[in-house]
Amino acid sequence: VQLQASGGGLVQPGGSLRLSCQASGIIYSVHDMGWYRQAPGKQRELVAVASRDGSTNYGDSVKGRFTISRDNIKNTIYLQMNSLKPEETAVFYCYARIRPRIWDGMSDYWGQGTLVTVSS
Image 1 (cartoon, rainbow, N blue to C red):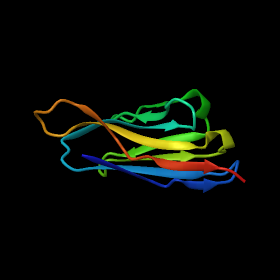
Image 2 (cartoon, rainbow, N blue to C red; image 1 turned 30 degrees about the horizontal axis):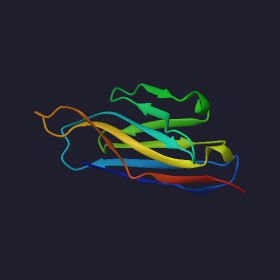
Image 3 (cartoon, rainbow, N blue to C red; image 1 turned 120 degrees about the vertical axis):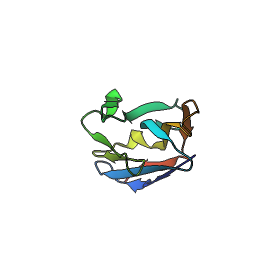
């Protein structure tokens, strides 16, 4: 199983950016998918999670500005980020809870991280 994240880059304060993350490989079922981020010198924190049934959960600091969505056919999640702030410069990691084969248990898989820099 691999998670491939994309969409990071440089954006000005107040700007928007959209991240994508696709799970691929041997996959029987995908459950929760989401995003975490880690700013320099800080702990990794939850950004947003989307369950298979479509329910979502957001970190308090991004509510109302970020939107997570997923395409269950493509095993892909998206994170639309609006009104970005300089202090949100961080590496964003996608993750997914996946059952690779029908007889496997569920495991958490992580993408390689994509850097989002918010700066003028």
